Image 1 (cartoon, rainbow, N blue to C red):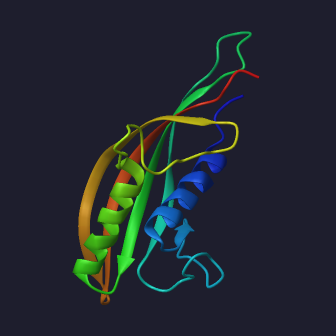
Image 2 (image 1 turned 180 degrees about the vertical axis):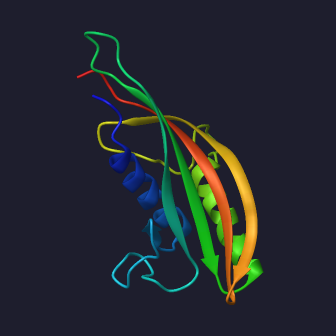
Length: 145
């Protein structure tokens, strides 16, 4: 099975919201119904930026992908935006004392086998709203069917 971007994206969005305790929108600001905090600032927005896939060889059902994501932390102050960015970085890249990543990212039918930071554009402000942009890469594989 090839890597399904939407499945991986929603798993990452849910992992970020769970680990930060703040809502994470998918390509747009969270709605009032989004868990856990609706559209109350601070929040994050996940933007899937595409990726590359390596198809399985003939007769093999497994597929691999390298998916790029932007996470924008939105806040009312610069300090709050950086605080949220720190929480996101910890959610995606933080490790546990026993080894492995502290926050599981578990897309159905896929396994995240690697995570890395791609780039941080840092902080910006527009109309009194602060944001902090970070990009992450997830390396994903699918099991043999």
